[in-house]
Image (cartoon, rainbow, N blue to C red; front, top):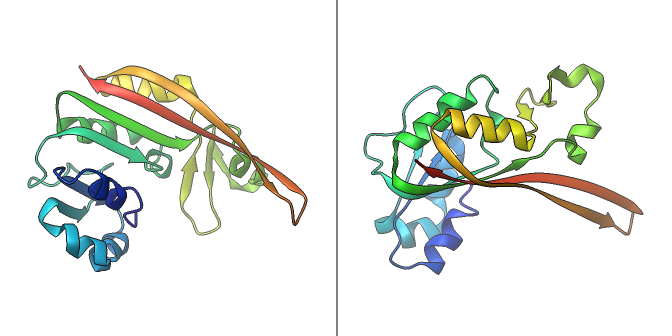
Amino acid sequence: GAGNALFPILHEYPSLRCYGVDISKRAVGLVRSRAEFKAYQARCKVWACDVATCSLPRELEPVDIATLIFVLSAIHPTKIPQALQHVRMKMNKDAVLFVRDYGIYDLSQIRFGPGSKLGENLYVRGDGTRTYFFSKEVLGRMLEEAGFAVAEIVYHRKTITNAKKDLQMKRTWIQAKATTA
């Protein structure tokens, strides 16, 4: 992404080294162009890489903590196990993976028309990108198949109110914590 999680973490933990990976070269370029990147450049490296189809960069050292924030939903469900394995291969023993993504029945899933549905909980957006919506059972199974031990999976539900338009928007995200076995 654009570094919205990366830079606050670097700011909060001055001794931490961080790596960022995104499928989009444009997104990686945006991160590199931000003033914060220049300030943290000694402790931060970023790459463009499709984690679903290729291993993570060789220069990326094994990590103790990894985050996948709205990453897995953009990957075709048949490729998610391979993506998780690629991430796991770059994690130390007893490392922790945190996942946050779209949960089933999120407002954005409900809003998709019937012509957008590609499969069970899989949809195509107007720009051609895909979005997958996870149940706890499916995400848990995928994590376990990739060799992770699931510590916790929960739905995070929130109703967002737009008072001006008198709208209530029900959002559902899924959060998981898993460890390398």
